Length: 337
Image (cartoon, rainbow, N blue to C red):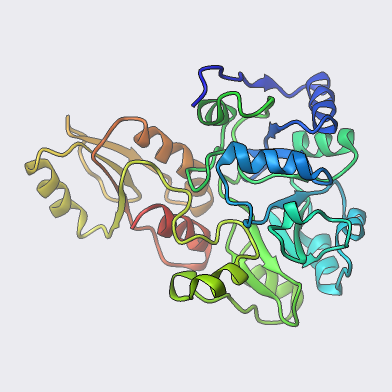
């Protein structure tokens, strides 16, 4: 990491207008959304978009989501805006839902990872919306972290991880949702749920009055086929991951696992959901909320805290396998084995 750390700036009106000016110059601005902090660039500027990939160490064939200011902007980026997209936008926007649509010819392939589809969403955060309005265009923005690492939910996380690879960091406080947006693919004949999020598949099905399909498990596909399926961010088998090895354990497995690791002299961290475990010298325990929404809001910050302690292993108590926990389990399945 560079030694020149860019410090976050409180996102008042002057800072937001300055950030919009930087975006027009083709520079990178990190900004808060309700899900995680994004690393933003002018989505119409291929060189600026390329700088995102360089800053993150992200492969160029991984598509980005374009953030837009309003529903009317859909037609600026999508060649066809199906009725399903309008229904979902009117129901869930602004909010943590991204839609994959067939792109217009003007959308740079740098944004779409070389594909003929583009991901679009309208974020539900006052700073993000003010930035979009001041900028006057679409902002391509993946999470503001190194590729495949833990997503940032606080401005300081961006500063610590990206150093001076970003030109400005707008501080809008902690993210309220805490996990990335739901992604629904509407570019084909049937809607597909590509990534679960705060907005559940059941909620989407209720609006569309049709059942969602899901993509195949990328780990079971050939490399060429998996690349074709990579229509959206966050579809890697390993993602959102700490540098410290992490494993998930059921509540009944955890006590024995902890005793074994202590006997082996290991220093461990534990993300606890319900199980009461006493913290001792070799065990750092973080207790997360029992309600799914609050758990999601706290998850990445807790993982980052444990990852900073130079532990040998992070244990994660397996949360419930229910619809409301689907997004959390999806992230944990990629962050911990």
